[in-house]
Length: 454
Image (cartoon, rainbow, N blue to C red; front, side, top):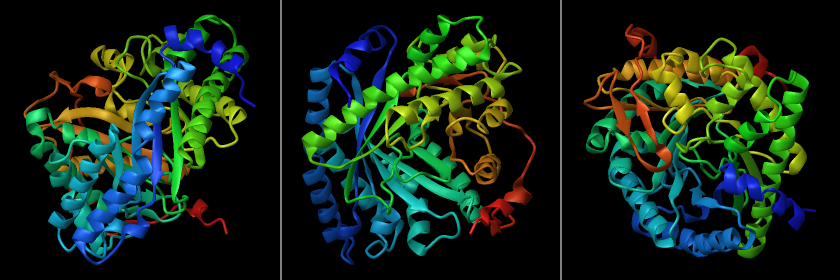
């Protein structure tokens, strides 16, 4: 049982070390909203989300006051809209109407973001999938709170290279449509390999078809807590280092478990999972890169970075699974460049490149995240970067993702300011050599041999 003593024990973490519950995310199934009439479908979507989530924000605020635990975001994830709108959407504009409905009801209930404007196309695309994907630039440029994701590959099915090629074009078009805001639309768009059904973090959250009708998932974050704990064992051996990370992850996850259970009880919605992810913010001291430096690196990106990140990720998971029966989502260490001041400093110092970040994604929780690149980068180059990251996820049977932001009108050496939790970023150089012929081949990259486990 979780007791009040454990909450009191975390007071210092909250007040001095940037511990927070990053999000309470309510997952809502919209499968019962499908119908052949677009107007009726939009009305059903609105009514289902509103009736389910109308008390989500006030409940989160009550829990934050009651337990003294900051809850930064309240969010919603829904069934991938390509599945919901397949019967009534016959054009990209039809899907955009659903996106605007989602945005409207998100504002109505007061949540920060709504995820699930999504398609799952790891093996092939239906007509509805392709229409939704092609509608993404218009949808994200005409809404504020809607987030989009596309799953392009999996260990069981391989990589859908037709969809990879298309997503390179879609990302570039989204950047162009939102260029007046430094291509901010791309910050709300992520592509996955092995996307989880229960991820509470944006922009990749959607409510998987294997989930219950409604569910409460909580994401906890505490890079600053881990860094402070490691400062106390500076110079100790790896055994002491690992034990310290595990114990700290345990304490952080218990806070998430408490909040998740309380939200579940108050809202009358089943508890799903706690996602323990070291998700940084631009705040000083709330950085995964700073943890890597505390482990012993001059800068993130120095030799030893991948090993240090592997250690960190593994010990976070080991500590987390002891604290909650249901740890899920992504759970581990995020390395988003624009949201992590230590990563930004490493890029500016010349210690961290796109290629080193790709190597780090082999052992971290997600992938190439919130990376600003030149606005004149070719769509085929973006597709090539996506293909590389999908391959890492497919072969290693892990979730990988790409959230690149080609900033229209800006180049290497310039900076871009997104604001809030999205932070700011230096624009990173991209390998100039072409992969056009590779991404234009079409078809699928087959699943690896170890996918055949039956």
